[in-house]
Length: 605
Image (cartoon, rainbow, N blue to C red):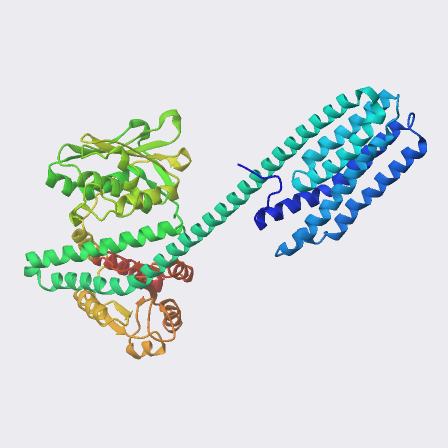
């Protein structure tokens, strides 16, 4: 870095140089005064007293210059914005604050006494110390240092011949050499100071830029979530209606329920519903607003359920789907979010089955080395993952083995959900894989999540069996349900499906008091299903509050396609169940059966 002797800098650098110089003024005043007193004390025995007192008075008078500078520019360090126009005034004033004391130190030569070599050497040493101090302390003002030292040196050198006689040339030469070295030291100190200031300012600009980028990224993420929330409602409504209509048709036309076209339509609708649910779950996890719901549950029970869900696909592909639970890890109960943990394991197992053409998949549970919790591992004999892809596969929509975007191979959201959910639950997630040899995804379950050990197993049912079981456990025939939804398609689908279950359903279109009119005088709902977005003066939660006042014995359920976390939080705070569209018929039947059974028991009691 080539810095000229009298450089000019950008305003930001000049501002930093001013602040450094201003903060040094008080130290200059103290150092100037103390060193002057020491020189005067040392010269008192040899030099004429009047001369020493005169010089000391001059030096102490110069001390006032520093205090004047402190007073004149006291408001400048705190000024916002910084008045750069005043910098020139400061630079001029500081030049005088450095030059006049420099002349005072140069006049130290008048304290030389011919023939008193000890005294003269002491005076020269004092001058050298003052010069060395000035070279470093005035690094912020290289121009002031050069002007001050030049004038001081001329004065001092003019007194050397009379004081040192025949040795004057040698002493003058040594002085000039010392002055040259100090000038070089001052320049290097100035250069180092400028480099450090520029580096710090660059770091501050970089930090500010990074903060702006982070802010824009957060805003983009919020915009994305708002867009998904806005688009989701309008897109999920017809999907929700489609799934309900398909199931209603199956209920009403058993002979046509297995027709290939109906099965394909149902599969397509379920795929769209799965995509929406995955997007909603990923959005909740990425937003940081998802909070785990802690509960104690049996881990072996979850393992059994997860394997049961993937076993039909594994058997179709001829894969061996097995589990291994170490005797030291069985039985085991955890305290964490059951749904999130099962979603993590379910995604890992389904991925392993999907990308394995032969061999098998193993879900194992064993103690971690050192007694620090347990390892949940999913092993497969699939394609394997290249080293350069092992990080990016956890990004949304990345499918290294599905570049053609075949929907039968998943949506590319499963591992992104796994990563965010495992971070939320405090589970360590690692991957080991070799191309052509398969992969192992490992979850480290900390010992702090382990509660106790019990062991039960429960069978897992498919969707059709779940629906049948739900309707058998709690018959819905004759139960009264009020639906508040402004979408005619949703109303028709709910009438068809709930009618096939024998439910007495009435529908309202708007979120206002007119919804009560569809009930009549002698009909009161036992349950209210209410959409969140409604035309009228009230949203779904406010509408449920109003209907609860009108029908205190009814149970409110909010149906929504919103991704906004505050909707779910508001509903739960008000005491309402939340069903996210599209709702599986089995889930709807089980939920209605549960709340209606509870309301009947409450009415009996």
